[in-house]
Image (cartoon, rainbow, N blue to C red; front, side, top):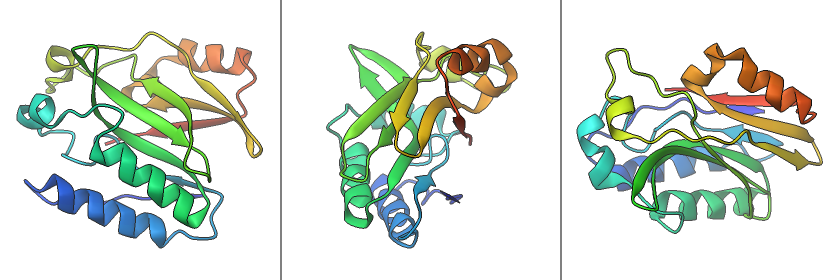
Length: 167
C-alpha cells in the first residue's frame, strides 16, 4: 500500500494533477495507492471550490483512471470537489486496476471549525463499502473518522479495510 502525500501547485490545477499522476506512476508494483483529501486545489482553497468543481468526466477522475490502469493498481482517488446535480460534494472514488470505477463516496461529516466546507459543500448520506479481491474496502474522508457509527455501519457491511483520506 502506498499513501501519497503531496503539496498543491498553487493556482495550477493541471500541474497538480500532473504531479499526482507522476507520483502514482512511481508506485508501480503496489496493490493499492491512496491520495489525500481535496489535493487537486488544496483543502483550504475554499474560494476555488465552486469554480474548480468537476463532474465525473472531468480531468481529475479521467487522469486518475488512466493512471490506475497504466500501472494496474487499485487507486483511492483521495477526494476532490465534484459537482453532482447542481451541488458541490467532497467526493472520492475507488478505481480498479482496469481503470473502472468501483465505488464513489461523498463525505458525510463536513468539517466546520475554521473551515468553509459546511457552507460550500453538500454532505453525502450513504455508507460505501466496495468488494475487491484484496478485501472489502470501506471509504471515509478526514473528519468522518470522529464518528464511530459510520465505521460500525461499514463493519456491518463486512468492511475489512478502511480507507480514510485526509487533507
